[in-house]
Image 1 (cartoon, rainbow, N blue to C red):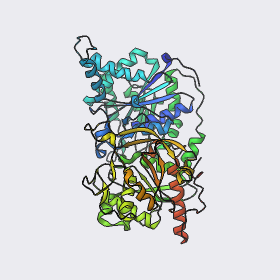
Image 2 (image 1 turned 120 degrees about the vertical axis):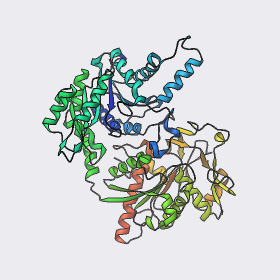
Image 3 (image 1 turned 90 degrees about the horizontal axis):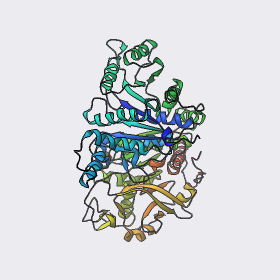
Image 4 (image 1 turned 180 degrees about the vertical axis):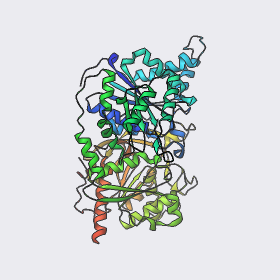
Length: 560
């Protein structure tokens, strides 16, 4: 890789128009992947215009998943896409909100940093925004910045103004502005309409930003005539009008962009000389997703927020990754734990594996506990994550240890058996934002355990987001009932992983393994879950019972 001085860093800005949710995050991540394949050091950041300091206190139904980085930042779910596509761990600096910008400025004003000046949007807010772009420059050839929302939103204006200034500061030849817009097909007219794109670009130009490249989301192919029309009215070259249609998998997007030479247009605009990208591995990975050689397995995710799948975006992707590494398709059904509580566990019978993800609050927990009892008794492969582990502890305490009324103190403060209880460090915490156990922490895996074989190492580091832990006063009783505490904090004081040795696959973690899974490197636990699902599927088809051994080599299952 070329040794580029900080002054040589190039910058790509991605904005959106017409409507939100067009896929700016996937577009940014896909461009990042193509540039990485060209040998460039790339990082991606997200500017979110909302006034929350971070999404940590926002409802999953409103904002989707909260993605946690190694350094404990609670961030937008698009950072998950960035990490998965460019295969780099990101940090707090990669997600910037209006709330954080204003928090920083007010803190500086209160301590007198502005020397009596009147604090204003320009230059103080825009300078703060620009500092976050510059902060990522060292060590990177290219910094990609995605601006949330759409052009025309009042919340986005300071970010767009900062970008306008930044392009002047570093030189236009060192930046590329990519505008993602919509070209809808109007059935009554029988044609694609470019007027929304024209208006969006005009609105962008009114604040001093001329796009260099247009990425057009469309349901139908862009004809040459449509491309020429967009180029003519939006003041870009026809080769800089890029089509973006829905794909069978999001991992196919970089390949379709490459076919249209988008990465070539970008490096030409930036004056970069790089080798052609080698997408052989990526193409093979996409082929496995679209045409798996070992059939499909059915996996049910039993959770609290399943009416909005974005609430579990990383779970969804990690299951797909587990399928890739096993050359197996993964059909995912999202089941409400409240429905399980009302309808019973019969609805779980068709599935080859079950997963219970994280969540907060009592709603739907009894349905999760019933799910754990079902899969434990029926031998269905199971992966529990965060709340999933806590439900497994509650179920075992009630049904295997005979501790009537066992519960988490989060759900039942007066429970006679608080098998899940608040972390000591959380007892006096009253502020909600950013005060949980967050980020990467080490864990030791017990020799001879299933997870020790799956990971292939004794020390791991995984990302956390929780307040409650397994109550150590009940560990002996749970151990006596057959549960094994196979992953512990280095001092042995906190339970990180549990498993049932006599079950085909029963593993639950206090941490969130989905956050470190990658399409070209599936997380070991998800790879092992899908391997076990295949075994369970085949046993169901043949009518033969599946046993713990079943020929599954856990230490290598799913590895690429």
